[in-house]
Length: 582
Image (cartoon, rainbow, N blue to C red):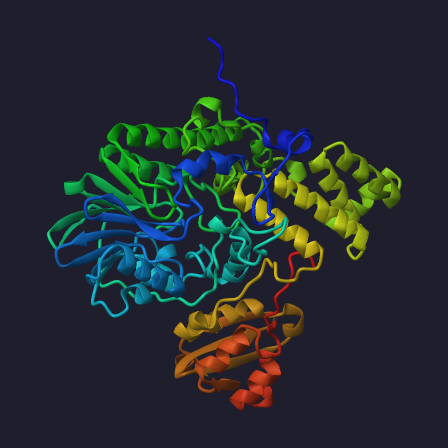
C-alpha cells in the first residue's frame, strides 16, 4: 500500500531550502504567506464586508465581519446573546448591529462562552437588566488575569501581556509590507466593560431561558472556563471549540499549558451530541450546518490534533530532543484535506516542544544541555573560529542570496551578539526575520518575526515586557503590592532590612525586605508593632507609580512619605518598557 505523502516539507526545509517561494501582497500592502488563509476563507466570517448580523436559522443570528462576533437568539420576550467582545468598543458595536439588523427587544440573558470575550458586557447591554451566565471560574479568571487569561504564575503577567501584544499584532502598522493582518488583530489594552456573572453553569447543568432549554458543558480550550452550549430544540451547539483552523495547541505568547487531550475531549463532546448546527464564537467560523458535515469536520480536527500530540510523545519516548521534535512532525496530506485543518493562526511546528517540556521541563536528558556558555561568549568564539566578523558577514550574504534563510539568521545572530550596536548587523538580522515572517503561514509566527525585525530597526513599541493597566492595579491594591516584591534589586538590597507598609485607599499590605528578598505581608498590623516606614496614597497615584508613569521620587513626594520610605522604595526597580532588541 502506498504511503500518504506529507503536504509540505518539515519546517526547517520550508524556510531554508525553498528559494522559489513567493509571498503575496494584500491590498493594504502587507507581504504575507497567504496560502493557509486562502484555504480558510470559505469557512471564516471575515469576508471583506463591514460587520453585520446574518441569519442562521429561524430566530438565530451570528455577527459577521469580526472573528469573535456573538451569537444572538431571539425569544418572545427578549434576546439571548453569547459572547460580548474584547472591550467596551466591541460591546457598543455589537449592540448597534443587533439593534439595526435583528431586534429592539431587550437582552434578557448574556452568556460568556469564555473569559477572553467577556469584556464588552456593559456597553452591549446598555442598561438592559440581563442575567449574565458563565462558568463558575469565569469571574475569578477575568478579575485576576492580564489581557487574555490567568497565567500559571500571575507575577509574570508583564512578560506575557507584552508577548500577547506581539502575538496579535496590536502595535503593528495598518499599512505597508509589515502591516498587521487586520482580521486577526486584537487591540489589546482598550477599556473593559466587563460585568460579573449573576448565574453560573457547571458542567452538564441546564437552564431554561424564556422557554429555551440550554445545557452547558465545560471545555478546556484556549481558556479554562470555556462553555459549550447545547440547545436540544434547535439541535445546535454554540462553542469555543471547533475553530476554523487547527486548534492553537500551544501559544507563542505564553499561557497555561494547553493539554491537547483536553481540547480533543471538548471536540468529541461536540461531535457526540450529533448537532445539526455548530456556531463557533471564539474562532470566527461561519455556521457549520449538517450532521454529516459536522461529524466529518470534527473528526478531521480531532485526528489532526491527536496526530501532532501522539507523534510528539512517540518521538520524545524514542529519545528525540524536544527542540528537535518540530523537525520530524508534518501532517499527512489526508489530514490536511479538510479546510478546518489549516495553520492560518498557529503553526504546527511551534507546538510539539511544549508537550515534552510539560513532562520533563527544560532539560533534554542529554548531559551537554546541562550547562552552556553565555550566548554572547559562544557567538564570539564561533566568530573567531570562522575567521572574524568579515568572514561571518560574507557567509551571511551568501546564505541570504541562496535562500538558506535559517542559516542566514544564525549567522546574523552571531554578528549581533558580538557587535550588538552595529547598525549593519542589526539590519542583517532584521532582514532575516522579515524574510522568515513572510515565509510563515501562521499569523502568530509572522507577527513575532515582524515585531523582531522592527525592534531591531529601532521601533521601541514592540516589547517582551508590559505592565498591567490602572484598573487592574486599583481593583486589588494588596495584590499589586505583592507583585512589587518581584522588582527588588538584590544588589541594592544586599545587607538591607526594613518593613515598608502601604495603605492604598485603606487597603493594607507590606514588603519586608531582608537582605535581597522581599516578603509580602498581607496584614502587617498583625505581625509588626510598627513598620519602619509607611506610604499612604490614593489608588490612582499608586497605579501611576506601579505602571512607571511616576518615578519613585515623585510617588514619595505625592504621598508625603518620609526619607525611610524613600530609601526602601528605592530598592525596587521602577517599571520601564524595554524593547525586544534594545
